Length: 376
Ligand SMILES: *Cc1c(COP(=O)(O)O)cnc(C)c1O
Image 1: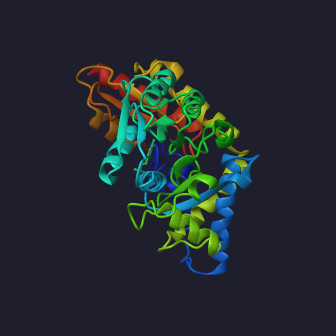
Image 2 (image 1 turned 90 degrees about the vertical axis):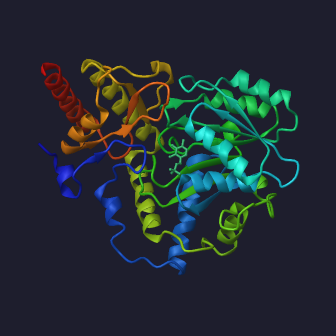
Image 3 (image 1 turned 30 degrees about the horizontal axis):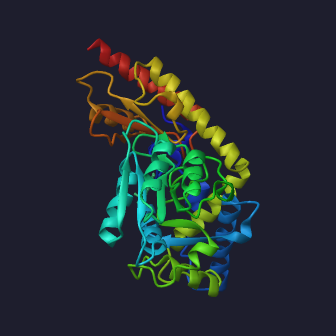
């Protein structure tokens, strides 16, 4: 039986890490032909920028700025790498334990930025001491990049330990917090983060269309002329947004921005990042418990689980994920395939407008499907 939520506009809930399930009110914000050039719109953009800075560094808002950038989250990551690293004499170190760390290495290579990958097993969290050792050994490294929640597996990397390590070594710290910002509490000033990247369609619960970068103003202000790309010049995008009161350089995703504004209002109404974190964590714990009862096991030990997304092993060798996927989709839930090469897994996200009752319904269906399969 379908719930009211799913029949209102949508045939299913997205248990995927972005795009994810949004509220009807977020979707409704897009049902107008919003204009792009006027003062009202630019003021809304600036208000969003200020609210993002308040979320990221509530006690030190004057030291940070937010820059919105068209495209998916990767475009913003690429904009940071291509703008933050100087044209001469810069070198990037990336802590890699999944596809998103690997993507930053690839980006640096394409951009012609000298890069060192410090690789870890995909099924383990990045070790701060090992990363620090790599930074210490190579004094030519100027910037260090880490992924907070590695969405590949759902590992939550130890942000405090890693940021301490990077700070000890005096490197500029870049954090891909794409899938955690807004859903896991963090303070970029306390952590000493110089650039933090996220996007509209993750834990803020907006729709896809732009990414955003929270930057220490003193760092970004020194990056004029560094960019290897015109469209992805983070400095220039910031400069225009600052000087022209919230104007984007090129066509902005107006509808997505309106939806994002509504999503920020709803984040506040929910009680802020702490409340959202508790809901996501509750979803995730309920999910793991129920999936275990249904005969599934998680890829990772519990200590590394994030509240964002969880990887489950195939329960038996002849398990057909595509069949499981189609059955669940027909019943109103869309899951996510695995991304590991070494172990067959699938993933279930627990972010977005999903709640305990949704988890309960999902688990009931999974148990029924699993039991029916066992009888065959
Ligand atoms: C979603 C995500 C990205 C960006 O992916 P896009 O497909 O470009 O939006 C980057 N890093 C992490 C950790 C992510 O979860």
